[in-house]
Image: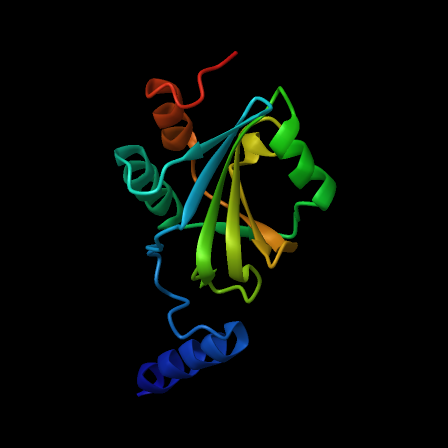
Length: 163
């Protein structure tokens, strides 16, 4: 009887705290409207509807599905600009047509319309995933197990070969 009362109560409290009734879902399944690679200082847009676009979106969705750890590390505007122009960094940016939510037990990182994934350079070694909302940084970041499949796809398909 205690389990029948406590489990829904705890689930409901977390859902109210996060504002997300699907907070327990590990699945990330959103379709971006644009994908841009910042490849060692050069901007490389991926054409919507191309095989690379759909394959890269699927790899990123798989990367963001499953366990992730929230951290208070937030991407500053200066770092965001650096990601776009630095000749020593590889970063993927996804834009979404409407704000999305990465389901988790944390209220932070909700309603973002851009996801930024550093693959080489600043914060890449921590597998950080940053969000932006209406051109402002979202609070904190998620950290996933690995972002290596994204980087491998970009290099193997010559979308962003190392310099």
